Image (cartoon, rainbow, N blue to C red; front, top):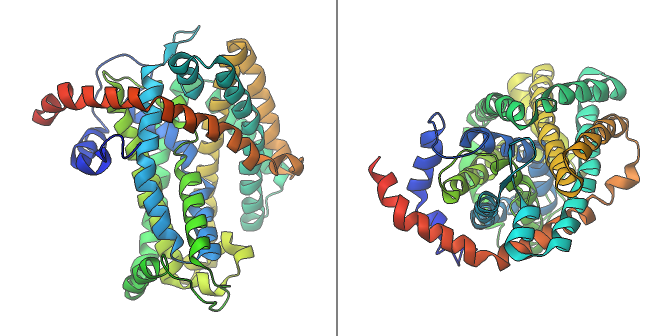
Amino acid sequence: MTVRLGFFQFRYFPHIIKQTFGKIFSKSEGNGTLTPFQATASALASTMGAANIVGVPVAIALGGPGAIFWMWLVALIGIGTKYSEVVLGMHYREKNEVGEYVGGPMYYIRKGLGWKKVASFLAFALMIEIVASTMVQSNSIATTMKGSFGLSPIVTGILVALLVVLVTYGGIKTIGKVSEKLIPFMVVIYLAAALVVIFANIKELPTAFGLIFEYAFRPMSAAGGFAGAGVAAAIRWGLARGLYSNEAGMGTAPIAHSAAITNHPAKQGFWGVFEVIVDTLVVCTITALVVLTSGVWKTISPDDASSMVTEAFVPVFGTSLAGTIVSTTLFLFVITTIVIIIFYGEKQAEFLFGTAFSKVMRFIYIGAIIVGAVGGLQFIWQFLDLLLALVVIPNVIAVLFLSGKVKEITNDYFTNLYPIERKK
């Protein structure tokens, strides 16, 4: 997609930044249910999760510092995929029974390609995948809260379930409003704390960047708790964590973006680019620099990689405050993630069986939060990667088949609207 669209994310980067970061508080023209930023914040709620705080240290522990280079590369190229998904979601969206705009891979596969059975298969796979994904997210926060505050997993599960019920009851408009306020707040808190740690280890910053670039292309030998890693491992873990974090190609983002108010699909597509920049190129990079400049990646074994960020915070903030900062941030990240992925699951149920059945699935997902918190049905979690593959593969194939439509829409924007937007 990057090649087919003429490397647009590099050629028009200043314009994309102006249309996104520059217009966060601007009103948008056109039809839709949410503002462009509310739709983007909702999509970011799904991507901004445990992967940003826990996934990056795992990538470094198993792939070495060079994994971060490959994470950056896949993000820059993945922008092409994310943009294409959002554009297609906007182009093929429609109004549902209650007058809200809905869209996503199931709609552009059915309407754009006429593959009704494939669209239904993807929707069903994603609907089931959300059950497993909700359990994993719930368990990660229950484990963290027990370790930091001694809170019982069942109590955490019930608390999370109640919060999720309150937010999801209001539908996409409430989710958009909550995400719009909560996402910037939690990102700023986490980045502020992380930057304090990086500043405290500022002398190590040039070394950290040196490690990232040097070991992206050559093996790294064992050092302390680090077991060593080859180039293949660096590439594998960099790509895996990068894509899992920003969800490019997963088909989930256009479900949230399709509700946005806009007068052209490409304009909302730019918010998809914004998503990848914030999630991977900013937040994941800051996490990586915290881990590398503090040196914790050398002393903590890969089995305990999830605790690296907390350990890096300890010398600066102290044990108690460090644990509180990471646990609170992770709690907020996971809550917003669960809220939006349940919305995604409901939209699959709505596509397959109508709006009434989507309410049934909501209660199943709420139950999965409590079951997952106490570590129940773990055999389902083991199918998570397989279930994700059943969603990603048909979605990516569909995006490739519809690449001509994405190019046509993109060309239309840069031919007709781009000259006007530049003058504003």
